[in-house]
Image (cartoon, rainbow, N blue to C red; front, side):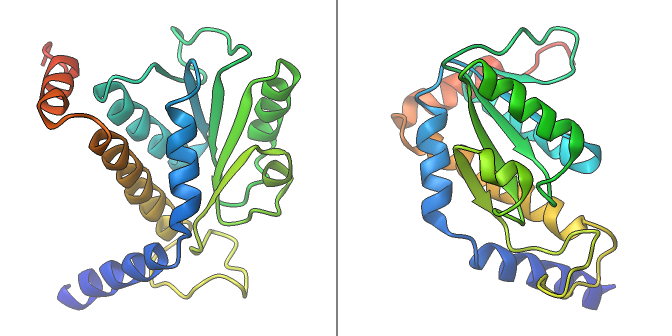
Length: 185
């Protein structure tokens, strides 16, 4: 088990070490400029989108998960953040098109910046990780399916949250996080 744990950790460290930090900063900075943020993904990427939404909500950002019953309509001045390893998930491509039609910005977290969604996005955060497709251009992994991408996306988006929090005065950070954390537990 130790070998597996160390291998998975090493894989993720290698993938994150190859991420272009400037892409992360550009996305983070844009998140502070838009009116509201909407996130979507399918399958496990959708779960990572929900984790990011929770972290951003705790940090005081107006954020919604596409498909939830209380999610409002996206509007001009908002940003749609999509998470898709392939960058070509059909439903997410449709969301991107609808967002563009009303002049909302589109951002994509993916392994493939040249994908269908990547080509129409305003911002792309590329994670050079393995997906379930196991293309020859993807790094080797001992993990099944798209685990490597999902884990790297989770940690990279958490790093963006930390980056955004670091832009706040330290005393405000604890206050914001404490105030927004669930109290009906």
